[in-house]
Length: 146
Ligand code: SF4
Ligand code: SF4
Image (cartoon, rainbow, N blue to C red; front, side, top):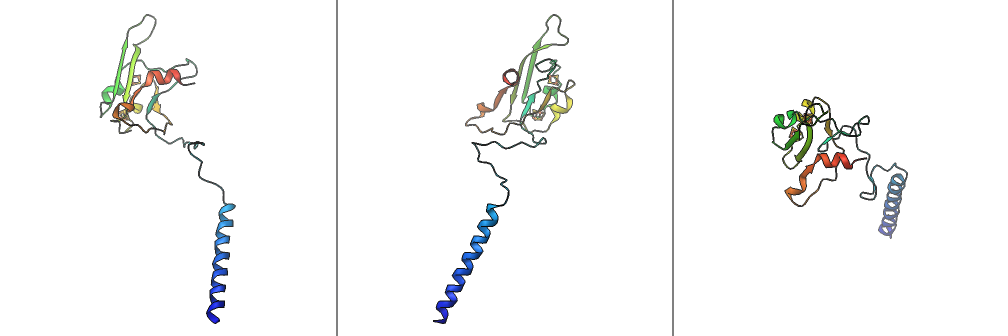
Protein backbone atom coordinates (compact mmCIF):
# COMPACT_ATOMS: atom_id res chain seq x y z
CA UNK A 1 0.00 0.00 0.00
CA UNK A 2 2.88 2.32 0.92
CA UNK A 3 4.62 1.74 -2.41
CA UNK A 4 1.32 2.46 -4.22
CA UNK A 5 1.14 5.99 -2.75
CA UNK A 6 4.87 6.50 -3.25
CA UNK A 7 4.56 5.66 -6.95
CA UNK A 8 1.47 7.85 -7.23
CA UNK A 9 3.39 10.76 -5.72
CA UNK A 10 6.46 10.18 -7.95
CA UNK A 11 4.27 10.00 -11.07
CA UNK A 12 2.38 13.17 -10.12
CA UNK A 13 5.61 15.02 -9.37
CA UNK A 14 7.23 14.03 -12.68
CA UNK A 15 4.07 15.23 -14.45
CA UNK A 16 4.37 18.63 -12.73
CA UNK A 17 8.09 18.89 -13.58
CA UNK A 18 7.37 17.98 -17.23
CA UNK A 19 4.56 20.54 -17.48
CA UNK A 20 6.83 23.20 -15.93
CA UNK A 21 9.46 22.59 -18.65
CA UNK A 22 6.80 22.64 -21.38
CA UNK A 23 5.33 25.93 -20.11
CA UNK A 24 8.79 27.50 -19.85
CA UNK A 25 9.55 26.49 -23.46
CA UNK A 26 6.18 27.88 -24.56
CA UNK A 27 7.03 31.38 -23.35
CA UNK A 28 10.72 31.38 -24.35
CA UNK A 29 11.44 33.55 -27.44
CA UNK A 30 11.84 31.45 -30.61
CA UNK A 31 15.39 31.50 -31.96
CA UNK A 32 15.00 29.01 -34.80
CA UNK A 33 13.26 29.52 -38.16
CA UNK A 34 11.06 27.19 -40.16
CA UNK A 35 13.63 26.70 -42.95
CA UNK A 36 13.17 26.58 -45.93
CA UNK A 37 9.76 28.32 -45.62
CA UNK A 38 11.46 31.08 -43.59
CA UNK A 39 14.94 32.49 -44.18
CA UNK A 40 17.38 33.57 -41.48
CA UNK A 41 18.70 37.11 -41.22
CA UNK A 42 22.38 36.76 -42.08
CA UNK A 43 24.97 38.44 -39.89
CA UNK A 44 27.02 41.14 -41.73
CA UNK A 45 30.18 39.16 -40.89
CA UNK A 46 29.02 36.12 -42.83
CA UNK A 47 31.32 35.14 -45.73
CA UNK A 48 29.54 33.53 -48.65
CA UNK A 49 31.35 33.11 -51.94
CA UNK A 50 32.88 36.23 -53.44
CA UNK A 51 30.65 38.34 -55.65
CA UNK A 52 30.81 41.51 -57.70
CA UNK A 53 29.31 44.49 -55.90
CA UNK A 54 26.56 46.34 -57.77
CA UNK A 55 27.04 50.07 -57.19
CA UNK A 56 24.00 52.33 -57.01
CA UNK A 57 25.56 55.21 -59.00
CA UNK A 58 26.42 53.06 -62.03
CA UNK A 59 23.88 50.25 -61.63
CA UNK A 60 26.65 47.71 -62.21
CA UNK A 61 30.08 46.59 -60.95
CA UNK A 62 33.30 48.62 -61.20
CA UNK A 63 35.71 45.93 -62.36
CA UNK A 64 38.45 47.40 -64.56
CA UNK A 65 39.85 43.97 -65.47
CA UNK A 66 43.18 44.70 -63.81
CA UNK A 67 43.56 40.99 -63.00
CA UNK A 68 44.95 41.54 -59.48
CA UNK A 69 42.37 39.25 -57.89
CA UNK A 70 43.14 36.49 -60.41
CA UNK A 71 46.91 36.81 -59.85
CA UNK A 72 46.67 36.94 -56.03
CA UNK A 73 44.23 34.05 -55.67
CA UNK A 74 46.22 31.16 -54.14
CA UNK A 75 43.75 28.58 -55.43
CA UNK A 76 43.49 29.72 -59.07
CA UNK A 77 39.74 29.92 -58.90
CA UNK A 78 39.17 33.29 -60.60
CA UNK A 79 39.21 33.89 -64.35
CA UNK A 80 38.93 37.50 -65.52
CA UNK A 81 39.18 38.79 -69.05
CA UNK A 82 38.21 41.91 -70.90
CA UNK A 83 38.65 44.01 -73.99
CA UNK A 84 39.54 47.58 -74.81
CA UNK A 85 36.48 49.67 -75.66
CA UNK A 86 36.27 53.27 -76.74
CA UNK A 87 35.41 55.67 -73.94
CA UNK A 88 36.02 53.04 -71.24
CA UNK A 89 38.92 53.55 -68.83
CA UNK A 90 40.89 50.33 -68.41
CA UNK A 91 39.46 47.20 -69.95
CA UNK A 92 35.76 46.36 -70.26
CA UNK A 93 35.19 43.14 -68.32
CA UNK A 94 33.77 40.38 -70.51
CA UNK A 95 34.54 37.29 -68.42
CA UNK A 96 34.49 36.88 -64.63
CA UNK A 97 34.11 33.36 -63.35
CA UNK A 98 34.69 31.79 -59.96
CA UNK A 99 35.32 28.11 -59.26
CA UNK A 100 33.92 28.06 -55.75
CA UNK A 101 34.79 24.37 -55.33
CA UNK A 102 38.44 25.46 -55.06
CA UNK A 103 37.95 28.68 -53.07
CA UNK A 104 39.22 28.74 -49.48
CA UNK A 105 37.53 32.08 -48.71
CA UNK A 106 40.91 33.52 -47.77
CA UNK A 107 39.83 37.00 -48.85
CA UNK A 108 43.00 37.89 -50.78
CA UNK A 109 40.98 38.89 -53.86
CA UNK A 110 38.67 41.14 -51.83
CA UNK A 111 41.65 42.82 -50.15
CA UNK A 112 43.56 43.50 -53.37
CA UNK A 113 40.72 44.86 -55.52
CA UNK A 114 41.50 48.55 -56.25
CA UNK A 115 37.88 49.47 -57.01
CA UNK A 116 36.33 47.61 -54.05
CA UNK A 117 34.07 45.81 -56.47
CA UNK A 118 34.65 42.42 -54.87
CA UNK A 119 32.96 41.41 -51.65
CA UNK A 120 31.49 38.35 -49.97
CA UNK A 121 27.93 37.43 -50.82
CA UNK A 122 25.39 36.48 -48.17
CA UNK A 123 24.51 33.36 -50.13
CA UNK A 124 24.24 30.28 -47.92
CA UNK A 125 22.18 27.86 -50.00
CA UNK A 126 25.25 26.49 -51.72
CA UNK A 127 24.62 22.76 -51.99
CA UNK A 128 25.28 21.07 -55.33
CA UNK A 129 25.44 17.61 -56.86
CA UNK A 130 28.61 18.01 -58.95
CA UNK A 131 31.74 20.17 -58.98
CA UNK A 132 30.34 21.94 -62.04
CA UNK A 133 27.52 23.34 -59.88
CA UNK A 134 30.10 25.58 -58.19
CA UNK A 135 31.26 27.36 -61.35
CA UNK A 136 29.76 30.82 -60.97
CA UNK A 137 29.48 33.45 -63.68
CA UNK A 138 29.80 36.57 -61.54
CA UNK A 139 29.01 38.93 -64.43
CA UNK A 140 25.70 37.16 -65.00
CA UNK A 141 24.97 37.19 -61.29
CA UNK A 142 25.56 40.93 -60.96
CA UNK A 143 23.31 41.63 -63.98
CA UNK A 144 20.46 39.51 -62.60
CA UNK A 145 20.67 40.97 -59.07
CA UNK A 146 18.20 43.75 -58.25
S1 SF4 B 1 38.69 34.19 -51.39
FE1 SF4 B 1 40.84 33.49 -51.70
S2 SF4 B 1 40.65 31.47 -52.63
FE2 SF4 B 1 38.65 32.44 -52.82
S3 SF4 B 1 38.64 33.41 -54.84
FE3 SF4 B 1 39.35 34.96 -53.37
S4 SF4 B 1 41.58 34.80 -53.35
FE4 SF4 B 1 40.79 32.92 -54.31
S1 SF4 C 1 40.94 43.14 -58.62
FE1 SF4 C 1 38.93 44.13 -58.75
S2 SF4 C 1 39.09 45.48 -60.51
FE2 SF4 C 1 40.80 44.04 -60.67
S3 SF4 C 1 40.04 42.37 -61.95
FE3 SF4 C 1 39.63 41.79 -59.86
S4 SF4 C 1 37.55 42.52 -59.44
FE4 SF4 C 1 38.27 43.56 -61.28
